[in-house]
Length: 212
Image (cartoon, rainbow, N blue to C red; front, side, top):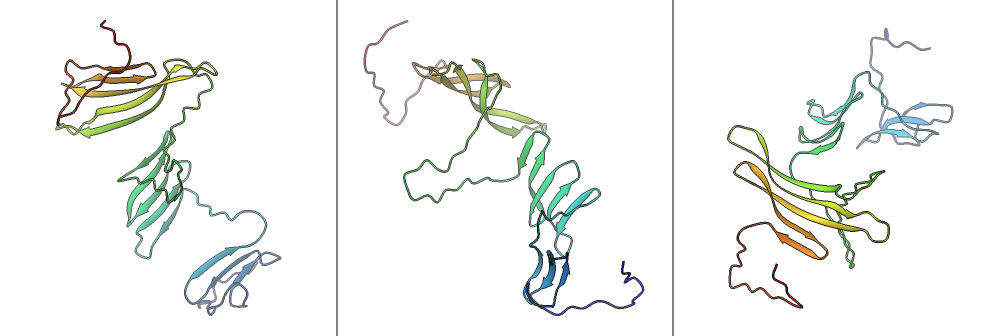
């Protein structure tokens, strides 16, 4: 082993690149290299296996002013920052995004992208299971998080070959949640006392009608 503790001076290595001698190398085949190109600092792992960064409690990436870029907590969350403000954090149930989330597709063809895919991969699906929910929340005047409305889907029929799904819209009225609309093949239920069509809108019916 080599001990540099009592040298009393800094070790200076001039600018170089991955192939010059002006670098620190580790491994029998120079698997790991640390060097400065004159423009960038580089940690280069070219050997067999993975590159590990290990910490006893957390690994943080910061700038020279200690502004956070990323934090990886031992046995806990992973946090991503923008300008020292946390924007993304993993949790024990998923992840939290603070701010706007844009899903962008640059496909110039006729594809369906961008796609937001909500997949309830249940080992035991059953009719009536919820298979995805979008919630719209707000803070009331008591600083409480309140669900103002939601759109969710559920299984109508889980039988192979004859599967059916349904969409539901709920909203908040006088502090309680009510169903506003249900949509599935063969039925559209508007759960309201009044249906209004504005701005000279028209309503058309086709086929047989019944009065129940």
